[in-house]
Image (cartoon, rainbow, N blue to C red; front, side):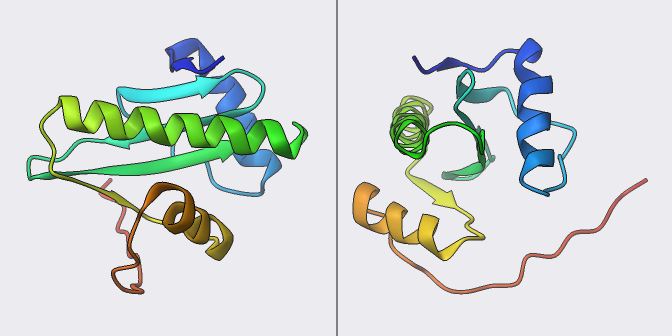
Length: 123
């Protein structure tokens, strides 16, 4: 059952990032959802007219059908919350082409462009 993400879920999500060989960002936004043992995802708010869906992660040992269903439900909850917060668009950043294809086919996203994502640590 998908529910809102709580601080005590962070260790589980960190373990999923590590199991996928990904770097855990170390800070998650306030708006997030999790199906414990299966998947999690987050919505980053902006001061503009759009929000981001980001940080989608799954437990690699969970059955693929459970991961698929959980991610779909988490995306729907992100959409609903974004609308409730008054955002006009939601933007998703995808690394894996298969996830981008699912976003287009299952949730009505449009591919805008292919970009390079850059970062700079501000220590």
